Length: 116
Image 1 (cartoon, rainbow, N blue to C red):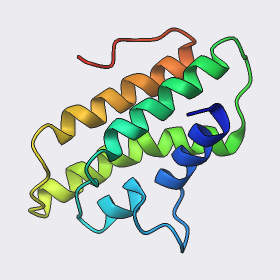
Image 2 (cartoon, rainbow, N blue to C red; image 1 turned 30 degrees about the horizontal axis):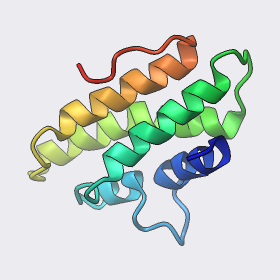
Image 3 (tube, rainbow, N blue to C red; image 1 turned 180 degrees about the vertical axis):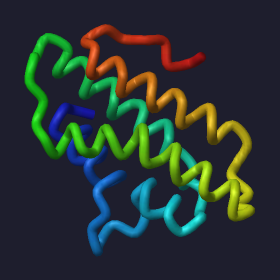
């Protein structure tokens, strides 16, 4: 996966568009779990983005928004889903924390262990 592919993949997972019913955010808004392999692909894309941008001091607004959605909005949707009785997959909460750690790494320019 190259940077352009990773960048577009993250946008597709977060920014809700009509033709993107399988994006992580859209699925969570509908109370649906991620597609098998979706979290792994997101983590891989975030690592590629980190590597491409680790020495860059500027990030584009759309990417920042997508990263925000991946960290904050997914946590909010997870909590709301739990409260509404959604039966999220085991370890999904930990997966969301790994995503948040990867996003923090992108912002800080230093990779944090995402397998905690």
